[in-house]
Image (cartoon, rainbow over all chains, first blue to last red; front, side):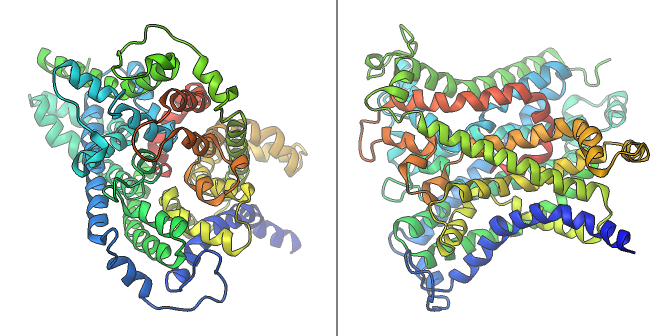
Length: 297
Length: 283
């Protein structure tokens, strides 16, 4: 009797430590954030806070400095740019590598994946250096071919584009990896059948390979999407949201409102908005992940 | 026979694409290396693409010179990385083993919630953790920041360890038990040696995340002496206008790059395989 109780309890005893860790540092902080988003909490005033209803959300949405639609636009432009850039580059490169012998392919993959292990902030510094008006490689190359230098990070359009390029550099390796793994699982017979029928390579790619890897592409797209929405280190290192809030995304705004302005309530409100968008994507992601993970393990 | 036969044109296109992507990936790294390792007198406008001489002066200046950030920020990052790695490895092994060896109905649901939360990148946790640590009086405590990073790496770790343990035949465990080995001895002599490769990958991923930590220490740790190199390097950035100290900023970044590139090089085969499955963790 006692043995059976112990045996039934064993897995849960093993799970206590990880679950406590995850509860305290992953779940509880979000629960608190939802609570504080409807309070008037500020730094140094976190207990006995008054409930203010939706005032924080209204303050964020109607903020003038910077206007919220502008922040939303930068967030959307940066996220979509990252998504499209890393998805196209990752997918096309994965297809190109598909016909490369396996040994050489994994060596190449390792090189493409180097940015993956570099700190986001160091990636930011690296690209800030690339775009530097005086000693950046971008302008040095432009001058070498006789084009006048561009001050990349001082205008809204060029700085968003510059941030997107940096973030694609940081993230396309993962897209490449996810899609390469999916390509390796496309049944060879399907492709052989296409060969035997005399289909040209372009049609085999379009009709056989792309449909077969569609779940993986979607998975990679979601990863890039949520990654783009939540990028902080890279943007903060490159532009700090400036000049004059021109590159401020929601991720930077929640930091600024909380840590610099000291308004915990408003920072929490932005976090709740971003969290809700990300969570919706996460639900789709989990469904897809389970389908993919089953195939790979 | 090749699965797909390419024409000459297609082969050429393939080669161009692969080389362009290589250039795209490597060029920024070469540039920061070239700025970090050339004498400061050559890191000014107009700049030559190739330095005429290479030196470690900047690296020395970052660590020991008058404007140095010193060794402390790197030591701090190492503490973050190693503590996060150990914590993550232990938590993931325990959780992974429980999920691999026991049929838990509630376990599946737990796992899905964990996975959904782990999908949210570090940035969305900045404000929540700031609130948590402020409200609980642990603001400024590096240990809690480390645990936060470990918690971020643990969900993927649990998934990977559950997979690792599932691949170890349960009969090996049963045989050891029949031979009279207790649960602890079985764990130490039979299971752990076979699980080491998986544990190594989980620990490495957590180490990289901890070593690279930036946003959470930036906000949660006000003390300069406890900041990692990622935050300390800001000393070389001028907020307004020109005048960033690029020589030292680049050299300092390179010092920070070395450890992650080394562990990546050592484990890249395994990491590449895992990365395909667990890419979500690093946003």
